[in-house]
Image (cartoon, rainbow, N blue to C red):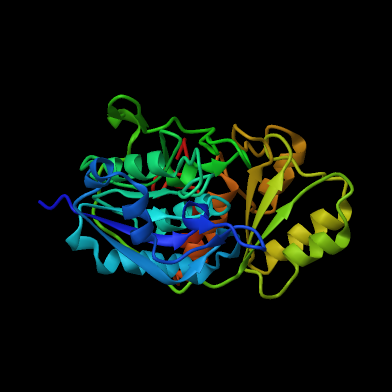
Length: 337
């Protein structure tokens, strides 16, 4: 079996260079890697091929079609490589990792996303360490999922979230332990990783039909209406207080939730808390949501809930099937399903 890795460079801080307008993605990243690493370190990457996107992306500009493009790129080259490394900006890396996990269901090899907080060409860059560790984990045949590798931690992709703007440990996985660690040795924790299962890639054309509604004290009717009552919206990820509690004294919010649910909008309720899960019905305010048919998102991250709902709504499934899938763990995104 080949040990060759495919590295896909999408842009992001790892390959950026200073400009008069701030850091910008630079092309010809393969040449940059070769000139930046000493020959001994560079050889540890081999064997590998690299594909660079024609249009590089600052990840703040990521769009739904980029996720489909990346999933198709991996699918098209799937049988030719032992694993895949995607070099990506940190701002939306967790969204991309989550989206890919739902489209590339049934992986039997690793897809590892990484990047850096400091560009490769800059002093004290974390890029080299992240790249080398990502490649090492991409050659681990016991990994069967999409992961985020950052600052020596290997995290499940659909459990990762960016937690710091400038620390080198920019990502965390608050409700799921890391599945690997790069220290003196590359440590893989088989008991926390997903088992292999039959390949079932679903790579639809993703449509922008999901909104996010973040609740806060004094939320305006206009914000509520934009998220729930827009006729193009088919799904909503609502971030509520504590264990999934809305301000049920807000009559406009509750009426809008009822109206949206009645017209077939699928609403998933997640918590604003950094960790823990939604338990609708633990308080009377949450029980109101159960009566409206709103789905408790358990301990899904905002990134996982948004991308899971987007992929399911774009896949042509029936509403009943989508609602069922949202309460089940497709690829490790839920702890208790």
